[in-house]
Length: 133
Image (cartoon, rainbow, N blue to C red; front, top):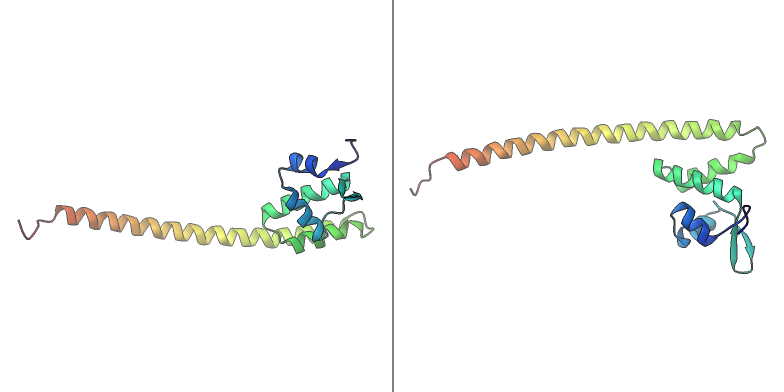
């Protein structure tokens, strides 16, 4: 295949995704491959968009957020609007992730305390004389 276009199989291999994933992103208007009969041909722009989609998903952005951010690419202001919007969404997502991490750290600390207490209880039960003895 030429450098300009990639088939669905080549895209799957290059980005470690399934054909179903690519078709799903196409149905959500995130990717716009060219069609040659039943064959999909992905352009460099599709490849760049897929990289951004996968990165956005890894960061926890919704597909709708990703679509809206990608659509800002053609705003005609050298991507200033897109960059500002992406920065805003990313800041909110980071705050959410930090909040989730802090809650998880609290839950881990509490569970460790409970396990320590349980361990002490079990140890004291093993040391206590049995009434039947």
